Length: 160
Image (cartoon, rainbow, N blue to C red; front, side):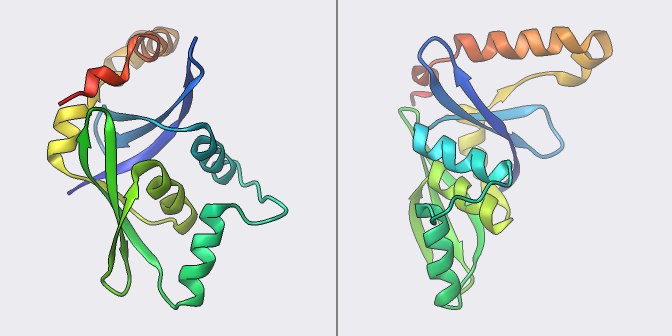
């Protein structure tokens, strides 16, 4: 398993489709995952430190785990098929729970636990962006190239 970092949420124009970006630690390899608007909102709220007046679904799940004296130890993104990623929630009691990758990431950010990915998924769906070479040239060029990447990427690019 390879460790990934949360790199942000972007909106692909003109479709307004949210894109979750995960980055392999210590590399320039990104894993782009299309997600739904509710999941993007839940992830963004966590990243911005916002707390809703009533618990959202992911907050409720975290409360249930705490009540059951279990915690989320890590998530593992285990497969991708036709641009659909699946993940496992790995709990402190040894249980594994099948989950959508977007929900798993939303929970991992709340639990502050590791986000892992199989090497096969990263090889199949990962994209390398040479940010070091771009940073040496011009940070604006890096941003332009990354935006260009986001504008031209489609879910079909990840079909197996």
